[in-house]
Image (cartoon, rainbow, N blue to C red):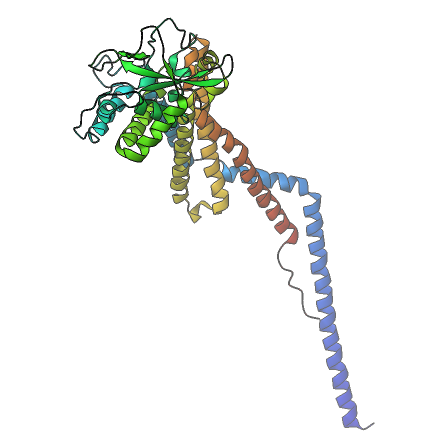
Length: 420
């Protein structure tokens, strides 16, 4: 081998040696990196329980109510309590037939009755007619201070309402079936009641005014056209036939009667006797219906639905305003911040409903059984819903937060291994 070729070969061997030496160094460095990473992962695994507890505490601290959150909690609770008080005040039970309070202000019934008079004036066509069998003229429907199914006087010695309040025997006072029967009774000067013996059935009778001047309490079940002492029941089917004719030929009278029916249910709904739930007097005796309505009635249901809607509107408003206050400077994600929002809604609903339950319970315990109707059923249902559903949402986010961060600890940063 020539000298020149020998030198070339030596340089090649030296270069390969240096290259292999560098590769060996990189391999050793990578091994050390992997060893360090293994030690770190082993350390994380060894302290997993403590790390998970730390992440749990960290989540609770970050989602705990603080500063402005407390202010929102007080605001939300105040609005919910104001809602409960306001609805109870608006739906306060009053004596039936009372138009004004002692201070001269209108009762709820008085306000509705005043509104009814304003509406009825628009239907007045100036035509004066006399009532006939199965026919109440428009001028009577407009001027009549009461509806015919409010009548309690009977011609003859007949136990017409079975010792119960007349509302629980008459179909016109049913909030749903009354839309037909009540309207029909107004159009035909009749009263439709439920009879349980000997078989369940509907009984319809004529109603008339005892004097030409229509006054409250002047109505009587029967007919001035026949001998005194006969209650003169009439045909429910024939009543329906006459109502059909009125609808086809006199829609103005039909509309006036329907509006009068709806407003009348409104005037009776928050009186002390109340209005039964739909169909109650079709299935139960008047006395049983009256007993149930003493504790829970149609007005309670309407109030509960209204209360639930307003409760959720307040929850939505508070959630919206609280989310407007989010900032990256808080050092938490929006999802974690939303947990605070959920806690505000959940706590405010629970506090407001809890205070209502306690206040109502104290009234009932003191002997005021009718105070059970002050119970905020709609708000309580909303509160229970949030107490069930919101913790599920919070628990899901908590799991994602804890295990997401723990997995990140296990994974660590990307390993920067040297090229071999």
